[in-house]
Structure formats: structure tokens, C-alpha cells
Length: 150
Image (tube, rainbow, N blue to C red; front, side):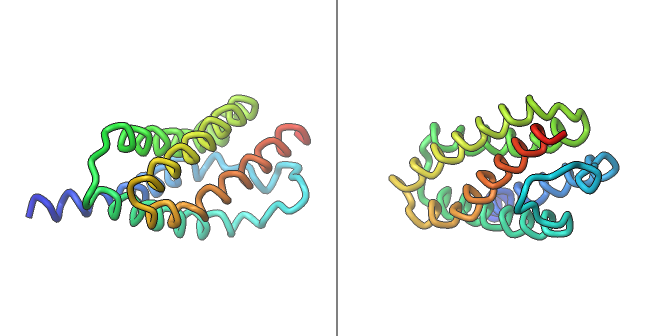
């Protein structure tokens, strides 16, 4: 039973955390009012994309943790999740767009490091993170573009 709770935690933490952050920032989102760079998706796209990404992130970590316990890899996972969750607060609630660029660049690096660690220990976990890294690189482009244009 204890093992099932642990596995559920691994699977659901990104989804639950992302949902809490979404709830906290919903009244502060000003995306529609911002001048956006080319290729900016409509705002409805973001919750769909993040839901899929958080599901894949949870599955990726769950598969990794079933047979692996590299403390450094686990630490990188939780630090990148922390950076992921806080980015939205920095960008939308505090409107610190320059800080949010620095923050998301650190997130990019952390996810790449996580993917490298996963690749050495559990390749499928890396493959499941490909949409995540692509999305946050795109989000980095959007963040920089919004900062410059606004």
C-alpha cells in the first residue's frame, strides 16, 4: 500500500502542482493584453499543452523511480519542478518579465540536465520529456519576445 501511494505521488505531483499554480495565477494572466512575438499560440492552447506535458512528466518520473534511486537525478527533478511552478508566479503575478527570462533559462538547463541523467539510467524517461523541453524552449522564445515587445 505504501508503495502505491509513493507511485501515485510520482505520477500526480506535476499535475496537482500545475493545477494549483494555474488556480493561483488565473486572475493575473494578462497574455491577451500583451504584444506577442510571431508564432504565439492562442491562450486556450496553454492549459492543454501543460496538461499533456505534466502527465508525461509524471509518467517519466514514475518510470524512472520504479527502478532507480540516484539522489542527484532526483534532486534535479524536484529543482526543475520548483523552477517550472515558480516561473508562472514570477511572470504573471509579479510581472517580472526580465527575471522570468533568467528563470526560464535556468529551467531549460535543468531539464536538459535531467534528460541527460535519465538517458543514462532510464531512456524511456528521457523520451517522454522531449515535448517538455521543446515546449519550454518555445516558452523561452515567447518570454523573451514579450519582454522585448512590451
